[in-house]
Picture 1 (cartoon, rainbow over the protein chains, first blue to last red):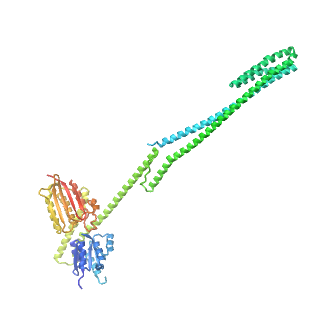
Picture 2 (cartoon, rainbow over the protein chains, first blue to last red):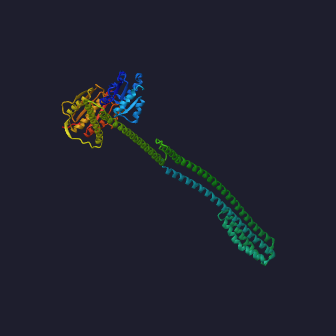
Picture 3 (spheres, chains in turn green, blue):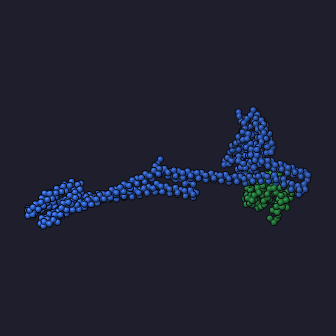
Length: 124
Length: 494
């Protein structure tokens, strides 16, 4: 079985790298720095999981999430929203938009790793 | 100006008082007429009594004289003498009572003279004759002479009484007529007074009670919260003043309410801004913190080769510096606002600084194109070069942030006689019209957050404070969807 593909959407290159390093070598990665790129890559790459920042140039990460949920092929793709907006309402908004997980920035690399593993496990 | 209510009421009361006074005067007049009629009746009774008394005296004279002649008794003579003594009094009494009536007075005079004649020309001589020759005194001739005189006197007495009766009935009829007229005039006046009293009451009700009710109803509406209530400003002076004062009060209340609502709205807005601030500050701090904590945690828990480890440490250091400058930016706002910002006072040429900073930012934004032209003449200004470059860098960073990759950012530095003008133009998203008035407000970020633009909402607010502290002006023009052009102007120095 090929390694799962993870789409990382964040406008900060250092944080994209951090996510990559945190998850280790078992995955292949695609990276998007803004909303348009995120949607384009999601549709072309068909990732197994999406890590999604909320505040990105060109719009909100949540609009990306809503778009993914409207595309039949991507409806079931697990999405983890990783946001520096950490209030309850931001949390709720992410789940309302269809997120499968939510991590606050700053996030614990181990926590990210285990959440991703959990969402990609065969039982899901 | 209409007549004051006080004057109206006083005028009305005075008119009523005069009218009621007149009514009572008429009633009094009628009463005095009745009294004079009563007096007249009493007078008539007196005249009749006096006349009858005189008749009695005359009868006594006649009877005592005749009886004396028949009997010769001295007792009758005494009666005669007694009657003679009372006669002048009785006559005088009658004369006095009728002296105001010429006809009766004449009758009374005639009566007095005839009575007198009866005593002196008939009675006394005959008594003297009787003492000498009683038979002569008793003769038919003497008797008929006496009877004739007495009958004349009696006739005159009857006439006097008849005249008195006639006069009395005339007086009574006239008194009755007077009384009837007085009563009808009095009744009419009473009715008139009552009608006027009613009219006065209606006037009071209309002029005072109704407006007062109107004001009371207005006050109730105001109390119920309808502050737009206004009363018509008319009527008597006092009511006019009252409604004017009422309307002024309502206006003032309404104005106060609006001010309170505006203040309330401002408070709500500042509350929103505050919560926005907390959200922004936390977001801006969390991004570098994510790098610092994430990489340091990885370095502590996992094994990396030396090259990677070093790179991660560099990221940590870089993000730490970013965090530090963010904190500095937040503190800046406080310093600028509190007037604690310390500006250096240097004379320098802004032109080269504009070019240098554009190169620095251009290097960080390789996807944008920079078109910088500052002219040949020096742009000499007085102030703090670091702070002014901070303003310029902020405008450049905004131009980069809000315009698409490949967009051209145009920088112009111009010199006029008295001003140095720096302008930064982009081809970005522009500023929605409804937000243009507030973009220099602290923490205001329009729709930037929703559109995914990071930032604190402090850059422009601080920039404006810095430019104004230099005696300059900052402004912009923007077309939504087509780009923005920000500029600042400073006084030029030699």
